[in-house]
Length: 299
Image (cartoon, rainbow, N blue to C red; front, side, top):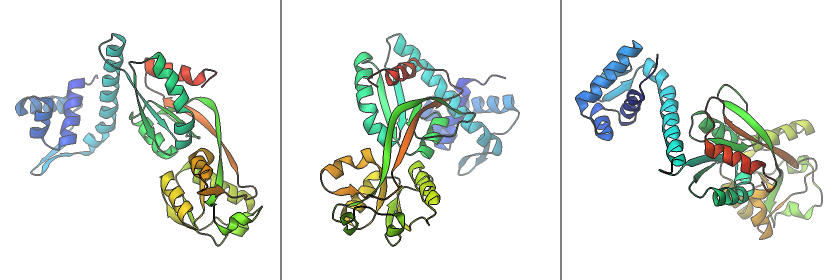
């Protein structure tokens, strides 16, 4: 049973606006026409998708089940039309890239410079986030490709290749921190320090905990958790907190003398990076061109 793309767009508009009236305005159709469209969709599926309440349209369990699939199908249709129009010269193609911060600031600038020089009519949108967020937005079709540390493959996500880029994570402190006077430290020496760290779901934090487990030491007390490297750097540079970040993210501040890595034995970690895409989606031309640019000798 094929689903009508117009019905799916109408369904999503009702979900987004919460009412038939506002959805009909957004779609530029009459409310009775939209109501008939929703009735035909429900009849075709043999279920009720909405509860009609005085406060608006509320999804039933069947509607909740349809929502993620309708979102993906509608987005795929829009992307296909965009790519066809781009190839016909009727519009711009858009490539949506997700990357962890290290890759975003190290890998992407030279690659995108060459990529957009060769394909000037394309537009690129970049989402910078940690792996668990990138995994979610890739699966729900909000982005087309991810460059990050390991992400679990599954029905929605596949690994394309391993990228040659690597980085290293270090324990960092303010340049004036008393611990900087010591030439070598062990994790036991940091037991009484306060830390600002990425959240437990973030890949760098997971790797940090793996290292401490291998050393047989208790993980430190993390007083502040944040997903934002800028917050970690500000706390470390301006206080006596310790932090943990990949080298590319604090290189500028280290050069400026605001913070420095600490020589903590066995706590420098090299990270590998991989490229991921959605498993069930067709390969858009813009994505194929970008992957080719990544693989080039200069990439």
